[in-house]
Amino acid sequence: MSRIAYVNGQYVPHKDAAVHVEDRGYQFADGVYEVCEVWKNNIVDMPRHMDRLGRSLSELRIDWPMTRKALEFVLAETVRRNKVHNGLVYVQVTRGVSRRDHFFPPEDVAPSIVVTARSASPAAADKQAETGISVVSYPENRWPRVDIKTIALLPNVLAKQNAKESGGKEAWYVDADGNVTEGGSTNAWIVTKDNKLVTRPAESGILKGITRTAVLDLAEKEGLSFEERAFSLEEAYDAREAFVTAATTIVMPVVKIDDRIVGNGHPGMVASRLRQLFHTVTDLKAV
Ligand code: PLP
Image 1 (tube, rainbow, N blue to C red):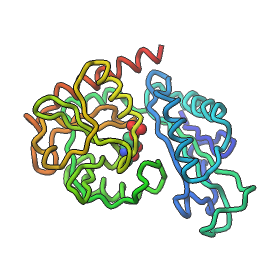
Image 2: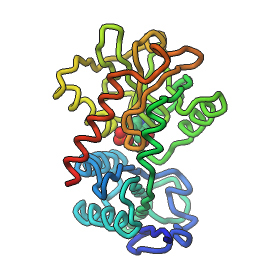
Image 3: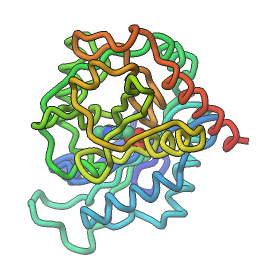
């Protein structure tokens, strides 16, 4: 089946999908994006993704490319046209196409929008979760506004590539105080030896992950003890468990950080339980 993309008002074959060379996303990374999980044909946590997209747009003073309702429809329609049962839907909005100039373009320049969707195998993700992943620490080198989900991801690309070349699947940023901020494309968590779930507060220094929020809700419902506070890389090395969260990975156990084995080197009980619970909740929403 050939893939379909939505580009500036039209559904087009994915292989022909293109934006103008003077799109500000292309030239200045002047845009924002969202990635949502698709689970059993349903876009998971759509309202929270739309809220965050609205916040990112407003922080950068980019207009909505269409009404929120219309955008929700385009996302669902792109998922439908690509026959994505389980997978991801991606939406990117940029400040539009205009002659290259750092200043904002004239007011009549409309934002550009691209939506794509692709299938992913839940079985492959579950298999990965059975063994867990390794992460590799990396000095925090991003701008302070990482709370905005911008398409300017070069630091993340370099950090993740470094992790890959060191045998890891994800990078963990470590700030000047020695604290873990987040992953290259995930939020970072540990479970302490006294069974407390810990993740960094989302006020600054991290992107407030939609999956992070959903997992905090789950932890609360399950009566798990949790703390939103900074944790150091040293504390993570000594933790009972570690894991990452994102729409792309849901809850993914971390079994190694740099050259240090976490816990007993196997996915922890808390991470595995949260992963399973997350699917149970999204199952209920999908019916
Ligand atoms: N942190 C960063 C830097 C990310 O890029 C992402 C996802 O892309 C996340 C955290 C996780 O966010 P979410 O759970 O909304 O996917």
